[in-house]
Image (tube, rainbow, N blue to C red):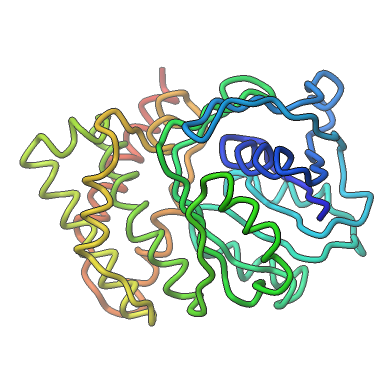
Length: 297
């Protein structure tokens, strides 16, 4: 299978390196200003192995691909889509973005069946162009069953590399299960400016984190998703103490965080369903204050 990766950050780099290592052709879709100097290989340092694999580089989707993996930040999606011309020959489009709203946007452009919603839980970071460090000892990939027939060979290669993969029939559960975990840990860690270990060691912040999980689960359930609060908290406990969310890293570095993509569906869903989410709103306000303070410096 031929793969294109749109967004070669920690997630895109990890997926691309794993597929290239398995023998599939992989093309990185890069911004024009960085493409010329981008290395012709991806280097990966992962608990699954250390490797360097050759990849192709391009500035637009100009050839047919079996799969386009979209792994940009949610804040970069609109501009990134300019590299996909109308009529691009793409078998499946698999977005691995944080949040939920991007699925409807992509389906409005590319069609319902071609867009296969998916989520990934992993801590992976691009430390320099072409160099990826996969920090967590897991990579959990959930994919909508509408893509099972088309994506099964690629998913099997990722599974053999070390990913935990499954196809899910219920797209609402697929998307909200990730968000009900991600939003609380991202918002709380960023608002507190603490890593996971520091966060849960403080009784006050731990209570806020758990309350935010409860609010996210309530909104998810109201939107038809089947989420398990106890399992989400158990998964959080399994994270390494030094783990930091991507939102926390973005705010600390002065980069635009994915605040609306991650918190927006919970706040808007709560408003639509007349649900109270005071802790989520409090954390969003605290993150917004940190962003403003960083910009003022």
